[in-house]
Image (cartoon, rainbow, N blue to C red):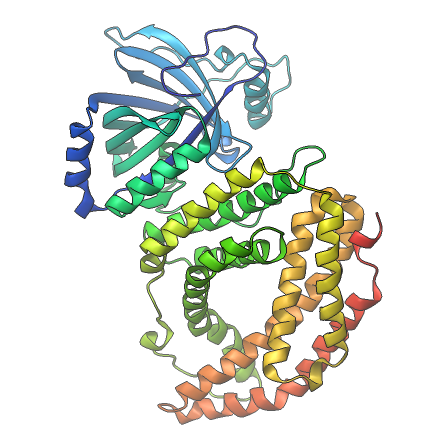
Length: 507
């Protein structure tokens, strides 16, 4: 629900939707951005929010937030839950009256009367329909000074809010410096166009970490949120091709932005890097395999590929060597000391903060919004043709996999990944059992080809390492001798894949 709009009706069935983009503001941009906001007529206000949850964080686990916030001399109770699209949140606000001296008002989950809000709360708390609401103690607080102004963007109205403050919990605190752009009325496309302008002007970095998420991390003693894995596209009933493509892009961007935001904030986690690479690969598959994206792919592929490869090189120099080295030692090789400098590559934070990557992300989110309203034909028929082609290419090359040169073997692996991802995109359109059985055939083949590729990469890295440590030559020779048998193992798994009828041929 847009700021300034309140849920005052009783018994309504649907809570409002909040559509908002959030950007981390770098220190170098802060003073200039604050001056621009003031010049635009932004008004300052002090906001104090108290977030509540169970002692074991049931609401946080369900990605819900429940807070009391003092704003403009009044208290408001707000519930937020995940929405149906990227950067959308379901929001229900209940005004509680003016601020008075003394303690804040008592939080009451029962104030949230829309059916969706009420059911989300009860499900998160494990409550039956008739069960009494439990006491939800304060978990943490957020105090910020906000400079906010509403501006016109196209045919829409957007509120810009520049926040500076801190999250506080159990005697600890973490700073907040961010710019939020929330759609008050109008279209998400106008919001995204405006957001790209502000991001470019001040070199901001897109983030999905809400204040609630930061508070829960502070309570848990964690610096960064968990890695975001792949999720199925959220499809409407009987989607058209435009709706299907938009939902696929949204699912890809959830994974890309969720992990890129944590990396930009400073995470060096291998899992964040790995899941970002997976997200980029899925996104590239969508742009390649879904109709109508040829131009978008031509514009975005260079930066997506640049970041993907740079992150992959870092992974090869850390994860791959660490995974293969024990196999080498078990075969009789000497333990190798791998210098830290040898494992380091480009800084992931620099990669995802780069203007080209940030602009590509926002551009693709905008394209998803545009695609949602586009006309489209039969989804199954369109996607099935692409799945058939990939499946045919993979299985035919799989029959002669050991005889293929290294480049063509690698091409089989890339096509198999695209087949898996496109199959996952299409999965909600087909019976779950058929999908599960069919995808179970793809995973062993992908694992085998992944191990095969990792050992090829490791061999090259051990050759490089052998220039300073001759003991690494054992690994080079052992991996070279092992390759023919590994190639035959890949062929075997690909033959099993070819023997099973895929799910897209059964409906």
